Length: 153
Image 1 (tube, rainbow, N blue to C red):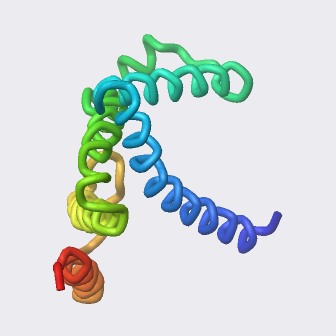
Image 2: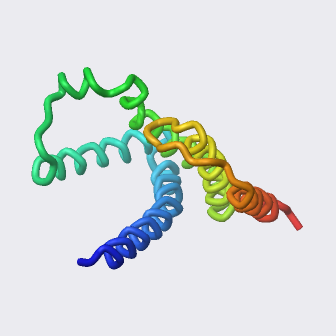
């Protein structure tokens, strides 16, 4: 696979991730309705995720030294799972109340604003990138678009 085709593979992969991201809260909300609430559904969903990840790790991941990883990883590097719990649970509450389009628009808006800051200041493992006028314009369009999606006209 050439460099250009590999690039387009990753573009398609990111697109599919976006489709999965909007599908997950709807599925989890349905589960929530049938198991007594969002925290029960989040527990089931995240336990299943943990089991699948463990199986995949056994077959595909290289071995590593936990003690070395503990020593070298910054404290905030261990909190990704907690953010996953927050996203899964919070989106489960919000999805049926605001709808898929509003949820995705707000998630995208939050992501793009946070990404701009993470790039600018090189936070959480991202390299530093300047906030250019064109980037600000693009973010502004997303913020305005989110406002349009949320308008009740």
